[in-house]
Length: 281
Image (cartoon, rainbow, N blue to C red):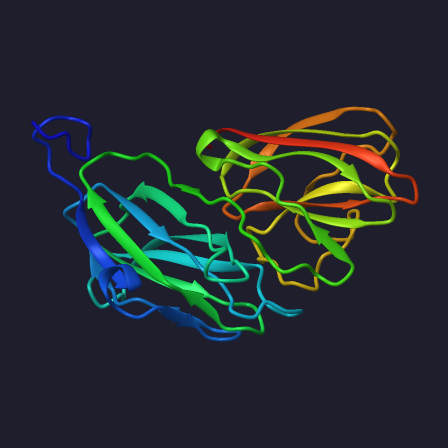
C-alpha cells in the first residue's frame, strides 16, 4: 500500500504540470535586469491545488541589485490568456550565490483551468532562477502558503547582515539574541511566511533610531535602499525605544518576507527579536 498526495491510500498521486530548469535537465532561467520573464500558459483544470519549489540568486549582488524577486501566478479561463480570473503576487529572497540560495516551498489552491507564472526583477543585476517545478494535486487547499528561509545576501554599504536563527518549517520567521557592536547598523531578514505574526523585541540600551519591522510584499527590496528607523517604505511595526523594556505585537505579514533594521548607538546593547507565524489569514 502506497500513501499518496492526499494522505489516503489509493488516491491520485501528484502530477507534474511544470518542470523547467536544471532539475528537469534543462537550463536555468535568467530574469533580465529591470524586467520580467514568463512561462507558457499551462493547463491545471484536473487539479484542486498546486505544490511548487523554486529558488533564486545573483552571481554578483551589488548596490542596485534586488534583494527580492517578484513571482506572479495568474489564473485564466482560456488557454490563450485572454480571460484572467485572478492572480497572486509574492516576493522571495534572492541569494548572493548559487550555493547560498534557499528553496521556496509553495502550495495553494488552483483558481482556474489555466495558469502562467511570471518572474519580476526590479534590480540592476540579472537574477538566475535555477529551476521551477510545480505539481498538481487532488488535495483541497483553502489558502496559499509559501515558505522560504532567508539566504546569505551581500551587505549594503554601512550595514552588517544578521540571519539569526529562523526555521520557517517550524513557523519561526526570526529569532536572534544579539550582542550588538557599537555604532553598527544591522540588516535582519526574516523568513518568508504569510499570515498572522507575533513579535517580541527588547534592547538593553536605547537604539539610535527605533527598530522597525518592514514588509517587502508590495514593492520588493533593493540593496542600497535600507534605512534605519521608520524612514522606510513598508513599515508595519515600530515598537518603543526605552532601554530594557520588552515590546510585543501581533500583525499581518503579507506575501513577501519581512525584515528589520537595528541601529545601535555608541553604547553596546543586547538585542532580542523573536517573530513567530501564528497562522493563515
